[in-house]
Length: 329
Image (tube, rainbow, N blue to C red):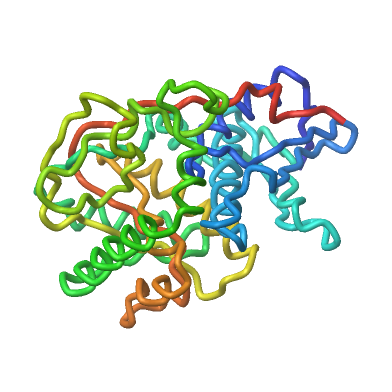
């Protein structure tokens, strides 16, 4: 394999694609360093963008960075390169999450390249979906996508779907009773009010979706009462179609694998014409997370609940400029 020369225009374009990845509250907790001399792009986690109350172990931070890593792999394949990835390459630096070397052009992965068209089309949809069932064949393709990244995607039966949704609703009660959690969420929402953070990060009000009309919504409500005047209400689907993404282990390496699998599943779902949203609420509470696991599955730990269906596409949320997340060393 022949290493690719890492020019600034090439690396910049790769990172522009990579940062389209989802992350908790759109905090974008990643940093990239291009080592042109060694032909390596480093991925680092940014703990300053973590959620101390909702994600004290930084599991969600790793998931977001893993999703960005997968986006980088897709971008490399689209440009005719093969991304050789090494996870956690520096044992004494836990925030050095991965090294990526680009080989090729004869080693490009066509299956990764095929996902590139979905990178900028994939957006979280916090809108109601229809009751139309996702075909079994489509679900099978999403399961296969997760397996390619060493993870499992499990579609729970009716009784366990109800269990997971009960956990979602319980987590909302926990959240409402925890002032620190509410403050953390508010710090990452953008309504145009004075004193809010940068508009290049966080969840903008146009991406909140409607309020629930008569039942508890399957998506997190970022719009605290009174913060978004005139926001409409809507009825959501009676029984959301969900899938549980997980691994046997629960280590930073597993989290990075799960983040890559999550992005692969989301991109494939987008190509399949599905709308998606991420439901991490019950996984943020240790007393609830273990109950999200389907006891009949091979998953040891659930890392994300993915809502799937047919409905309005979400809108693109802002991203930080590449210059803020990429350095050349």
